Amino acid sequence: SKLQCRFSGSCIIDIYTRRQCTYCRLKKCFDIKMRKDWIRTDEEKQIRQFIKLTKEQKNINNLSNDQQSLINFPIIVRKKKRKIIKSINQELVIKPILTQIFFGFNRNLSNNDQILLNNITNAYQLRTNDIDDFYLNRSISSTSIIKFFNEESIMHESLIYFYKSIPEFKQLDIHDQVLLIKSNLIKIIHLHYILQEKFQENPYISLYMSKWINKEFHYQMSRTRRYFDRFIEHPLILKLALIVFLFNINLSISYNNHQFNDYNNKMNIYKIQEFYIILLWRYLNYLFKEQEAIKSMEIIITKILHFQNLMNIMEENIRQEVDCNTLNQLMQSLFQLT
Image (tube, rainbow, N blue to C red; front, side, top):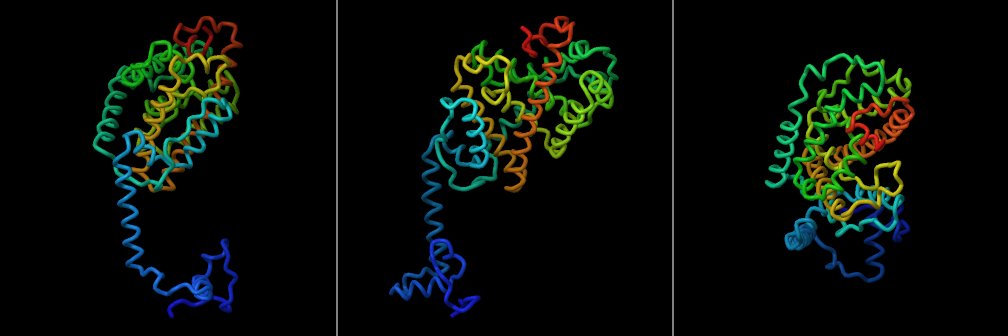
């Protein structure tokens, strides 16, 4: 008696329209002799939903830690990742272990998550202590882009020291460690700069980058960088992103077409990256509401990929410099000149 049709009481009910008018849907059910006692009361619906949640939680508790983590990982981001991987190399697409049951099922961080996040914060602080305020606030005196990068190698070294403190990274063989750093560090170094410069861009960099490359390049670089200002109150997000993108195998564009197949243990690297992606997602879900967490993950992924494209331009310019062989050994390796 509480239900009413908004129209004439004769709505067409099919698989596509059945949720649009409850009155006409029930009327159609009664027309085909459905019994009234089959209709669940609100209390029965709540009990049924509770039983369903209880069963699903029991199933989750019986899964391995890795499988439980995957439940909390958003299917939207997982699909984006699989599409990118598939477009580059079909045979190395990793299928998800489980599909998502509830989006953002657990918004709380476990004790292990909190300990791990705290360890990452402390490790980053410890490994970057050598970068003092004088260095960060200095004026750029380099007359060439080559000399500039030689002076900037201290920033790259400090990030490498941080990576060497990550247990999963240290467990990889030396060959894979070196290849990951050579392939990815240049592409993600800007997140390290943002953290070290406390989200304030060096005012001198505009003049020199416009001179060494062009104004549009610097505009794009600066514009991309500003997207990360939304995380100024949560710098740990960028530290996690630095770890996640260190373990890229097939998202980075490399000049060496065979480099993708040169890793000794690709599957192990995939698992490590997946672990930290899940940790990053949990942390975003802990900090933000669902839509903001999704948006944050989208910004992190797309803007780092944009940084990668810009650094490909930078690498091309470095290769064209007549004195590129005067880069120090570390920078030559990172720019893949050796």
